[in-house]
Length: 152
Image 1 (cartoon, helix red, strand yellow):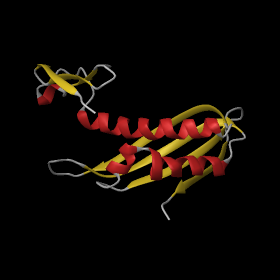
Image 2: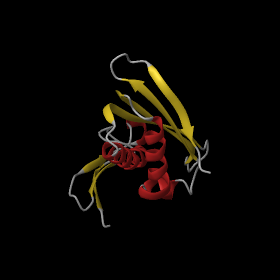
Image 3: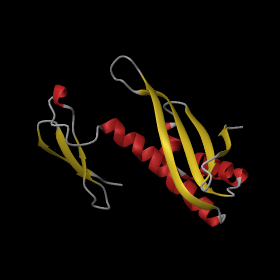
């Protein structure tokens, strides 16, 4: 894959990959920016979450699960000193739906982690990534199941 990043002044950069969709990155004012775009590490976090989210939703759709709402919460720890890299992260998969099969959710998370998501495969070599899930009933809003998928 090829991508290009162009400087737009101060600490603002715009880039695009093969799809051509522009992405803006910037720093906050205290770092010389205008606060007009995401920070580079935010983009990494969103890329990881987006990669696994697409896998999981695709798999659960094929398994005919009735998903009415879905989000991934990314939580990370970072080093105190520069470079302030991610030292650990948790991806929390949150599902809202009707009669969602916990085994299907666990299998979808596993397949994404072990087979399909290149962002997760790459970043998990740099820092540990914990994978947890919560399943809520869409009508009652009640928590039905929660757990964690761990490598065997």
